[in-house]
Image (cartoon, rainbow, N blue to C red):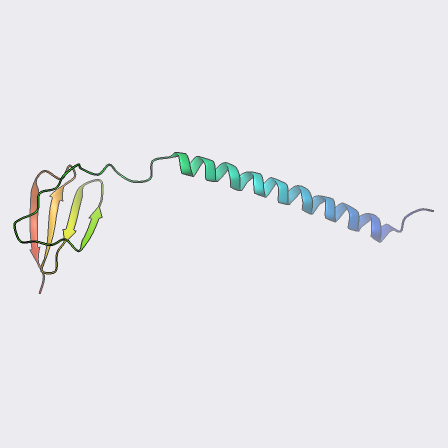
Length: 91
């Protein structure tokens, strides 16, 4: 007994969906492996010397500088953390 044409089309669609899902999952795994193996952040300096009496509350880093926020100031250091470049007083 021959199968109806709509059943043949449904079988093709299900097969196509299965192949598409397998390819999508493989792409996700490959992209995750590439992303997880790449360096994500710049290197942190071993030590940053803060002025006496300051308590850090936040830290931000870019390739050009390091910013440390205290309750009253923002301290801008060089990228290696050795030189204090700028002090910004907060109101």
